[in-house]
Image (cartoon, rainbow, N blue to C red; front, side):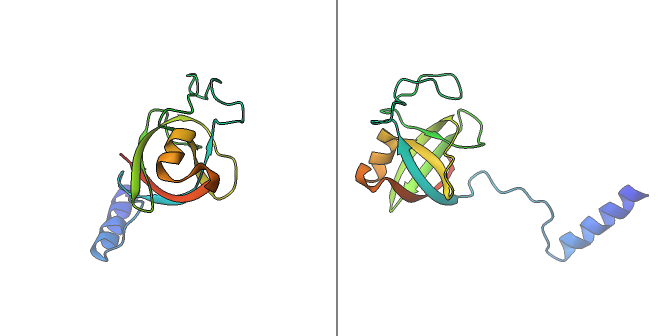
Length: 122
């Protein structure tokens, strides 16, 4: 009976054009701040959260929760790159990606330190 009632409510919501718990499509973009690491900070060559050695000259990124190996298209002011999630972070408010030096400098000069980007699964 409860299942029938729930199906009825969900059906009414669909008729009304409402979306209930609809997952975001995998291509939906998120926008946030991004920074970089690996040059002059001692991280180059260290072990990342997924167990590989960090290479600041590879196209990689840290993200707090996306699965390791996820490929992301990251865009800043019309420039796009593809990076692979291999570490956790950043742990600074307003930032969702911590790019390798190579990835960051493909989008903007390193002197910027942090930039606003949009990213989606590649």
